[in-house]
Image 1: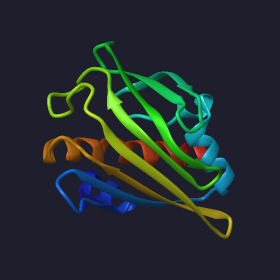
Image 2: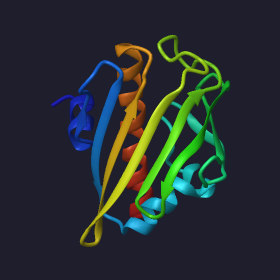
Image 3: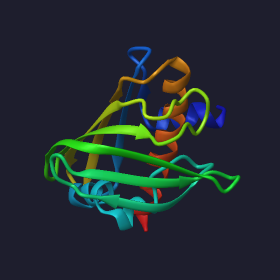
Image 4: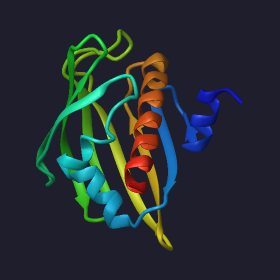
Length: 163
């Protein structure tokens, strides 16, 4: 099996519509720790972003109406910030936020195009099942680009949680 197919299976990816991504991933960690990884800037620095980029800064005001900003750096050294607003949250189980690129990291992901992300966390014994959902992507090419980035992020999150 090729690495991309394996990654999509490991992250249980589905794309039910041209502008939509769903990922189901079970982490070997308690729900509180997975929640912290999504909401604490110090943890976001270690997993958020695609494998080709490094994460160099993260800020998060985790409350309804609060803002977040995560800065990814591409291999050429250019910063590619992601930003958004927390629309809803229910600690330690539900986050909903907008997701926008400050500048286009690749042509298929336009700057300032707003998408919506929800993350729901469910206890499964000592493990946590994450249901991730992103809608409003600009095109099929944008959706597919985001699938790769989110799968990279989920894999990095699993590694962080295992430390």
